[in-house]
Image: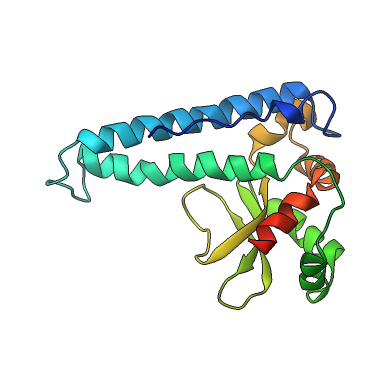
Length: 192
């Protein structure tokens, strides 16, 4: 079954503060491209000979190496767009977890600092091993995300997420991102 790009047009029309419709249109186009590539890769993998897979080169091997890029590129973007929408509906359970680690402001400051590490992704997650909240930075969709994480906030810090509105001023974009966090979605993820 082919993956379908989700419709995030509800984020446009001034719903988000500091992110223009033009910026969102560019970003949504890129996201849809990842979904298209994921479908293309999965279709090719379903029909290809996998008996000569190797490290050096083989069409199957190359498709498998790129599959995680398209997969994570698709779904990290969905997490990102889903956690936009600006509300203050933090569940008591999430609030308690944040308070146990210095509070919401401290965690958000750390998330922003992680996003400043470079182009890539910054996430706030709950680690299933220790049960604590963590922030991580990883520079590519398919490399660097620690295992056993429940993603709570996904922050795209690639230039395509902000250059239309902010040029190279990533810090200004991060300042605009924070008030647009949809805490009801983050709380839902935490509860799940």
